[in-house]
Length: 343
Length: 190
Image (cartoon, rainbow over all chains, first blue to last red; front, side, top):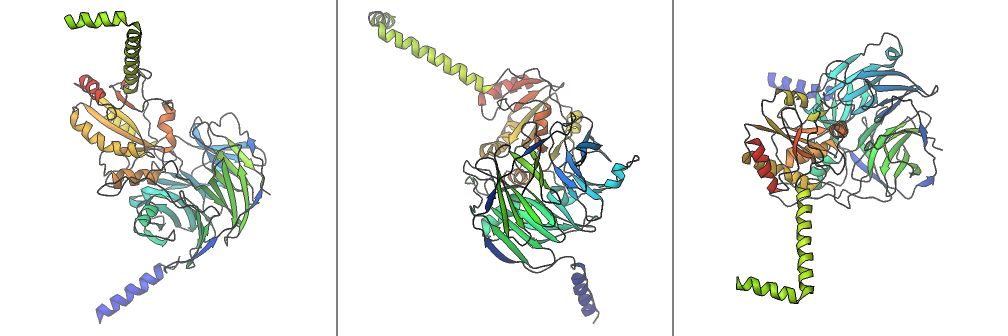
């Protein structure tokens, strides 16, 4: 009798603890896109001042463009006032320990108002920053979240609820990782359709792209596959958008007793480099044959526009609330800040 | 002796043949020079390599943080081999196995081998080094090619060096690709 109660308690506990997102298998709804409506956009170069050497990761947060520049002297995180067209504040000096960074892998907004996070991959930590505090004279960074175990391998992160993050992690066989601030991790929701044994392994480990979120919606664009998956953590279905030039990963696999190394071939095509979103749209930066392509969808997967960018080779993008984009160019040379006024 | 005299006489009588032989000789000299330039380069010799903490070690058992500069500062070894591994090229991944062989060939009491993977997405590098190559020695991931940038390493430069205790380059060139270079490495390390 006692054992029965224990089992019942365990079942109830399991059900209660998984109420943040669906525990069910995802059902795939594949949308094969026809051609996009093409439009033109003229990139505009932004001069953010002489301190800026090679801007890289970026996020539009309130009235600021927050971006990283590891080549800049002293502090590496910049708060650029979009209206005033000037850097209002710099933060995070280079170094080890609290309040310092060794890498800025990602900048993403938190669910609590005024909170953003900086992911330092090398020191395996998230730095929480309150924008109100940043603009005050007595700035103190809020706190740091140490990432342990599997979380040291996070590739892309977003926050989807208070104290709940979602990310892509190496070695989770294609599942998303949900974790809280204490480091509890669970893995749910396969990210790509059409698995077979070998490709499941390859996709699951190596081909993830960037995450972007709006409310409880998540979109994932893949690095080597022309696919964008959109789903809601409370739902049980995935909208899988296959582009008009759908391609699957091509990679070199040399014969070996075990698996071969995954390396790009000459014909390997890179798909999604960067993803960003606002409440209304998803913006995907894609590697094109000549320059970049920006594709825009709504959160139901309905395509909107396609923009060809030939003037610059973009690496990262960040969307404004009114549907325009900031971007940084490739870091192989000193990169630049770009503004794209989309129609 | 008679044969040599006969050969010289034939060459004297047939000047065209002699010209072709000279051209052939010069061509061989040129090839040898070109090959030597592939083996090693003097371009960066004496240059001091800077190590900072911007690279992440990712193939330890528990993924504990190990800073590259700590590894360098704590090393008691007289020499270090530093090699940047292009993790988006299959031959370079194969090369990781080669470092196991080199480690056995050279005096590992006197030299550390430091590998820095670059130019590929982080999870792809990790998959290739940890899952495929099963490489257990420390491998660092150069976030955003920071190491190349701070050391001003250009695209055509060699990405493998032997450095001394002052972190100055004494040989540049990859001993895995060029077995002749192993001799030079071994002679200096001895």
